[in-house]
Image 1 (cartoon, rainbow, N blue to C red):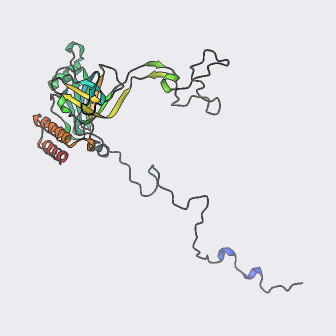
Image 2 (image 1 turned 45 degrees about the vertical axis):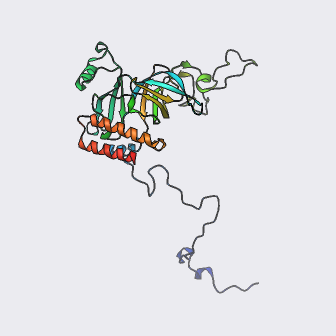
Image 3 (image 1 turned 90 degrees about the vertical axis):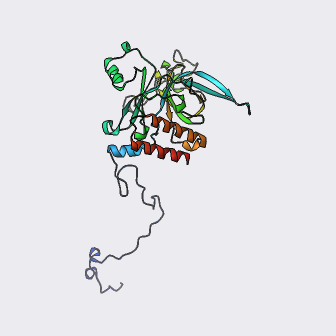
Amino acid sequence: MPRKSFLSWAQFPPQFLLPRSHVQHVAKRGIQSIHPPRPNRFNYGPGLPVLKSTTTAALERKAFTLPIRTGALAVKKGMTAVYDIETGRRTPCTVLQMDRVQVVAHKTRRKNGYYAVQVGAGWKHPSNVTRPQLGHFAGNGVSPKRHLVEFRVKDERGLLGIGEMIGADWFQEGQFVDARANCRGMGFAGGMKRHGFKGQGASHGNSLAHRIMGSSGQSQGGGSRVLPGKKMPGRMGGQQVTTQNVKVLKVDPVKGIVVLKGKALYTEHSFWSILTVFIRMHQWPRQVYREVARCHQEAMARHANYSTVGASGCRAFTSNCIS
C-alpha cells in the first residue's frame, strides 16, 4: 500500500482565492476572424460621423452634383445623320428645337429653401389657362407658357433674370448635356413584353397559357401572399427617362435648333428638358470651356437686378473655366 502524503486538500486554498496569473492571450487562427469588425453604414459604433438632418447640411451634400447653369426646354423634331468629310463616318443625331424659352420665376433659399429657375416654353392662349396661372405669369411680366419646368441650380449665380430669353446659343458645340423626356407609352403589357419572361411551354398539354407569366408566389412558405416588387403585367412605358452625357454636335441660334449625338428613346414632338452637365467638364475641349463661360457671363450681364456678389461669383467661375 503506497504511503500517504502529509499534505491534504484542506491545506490548499480554493482555486478562486488564488491570484490570477497575467498570461498574454495569443489569438489563434480559427473559424472566427482575428481582425476587428469594420464599422457598418449605420450610425452604430465608434468613429462614425453624426448624421446631419438640417437643410444646410442637405444643401452642402447637393452642392457637388447641382449644376451652376440652368437648363432649357426643347421639342424633338426628328432624327438625321451628320457625315464627317475627312473620315466619311456617319453619326446619327437627334434634332431639337427651342420655342420661346423664357425664365418665368425664381426659387431662392431664403424663401423656398433652395435655388431653382422656373423656365417656360411655347405659348398658350389665355382662355385655356387658369386664373392662378394667369396671375403668376402676369405678376412676372411674361406670356402664358405651355410647358413649365423647374431647374435646380447650385447657388444664386445661376439665377437668370425673370423674362430672360434662353436661345440655342445657350449651348455650345462639343458640350455634354443630359437629355430628359417621357419615353413612348405602350399601354398595358404582359410579362413577356414588359419584363422579358420566357413564357410557358408550346406543347405537351398547354392550352391557352403560352404567354402567361406563371406562379406569382408561394402558398405557405411565403405567407400566402404576393411579395412586394413582384414583376407582373402592368402599364409599360410613359415614364421619365434621362440620357446622360450626350454630346452637342450642332447649334443654330437663328432657327433655335440644337443637334444632339445619337438616338433617343422618345417619340417625335415630345417635350424635352436639356440640362447642362458640370460633373464631367473635364471631357470638354478648352474652347468649349471658354464659350460656355462667355455665354454664362453675357447672360448674367443682361440681368438688370444682378447683384455684386453674383457678378463676382460669375467672374470667378469664368476664370476657373478658362484657366
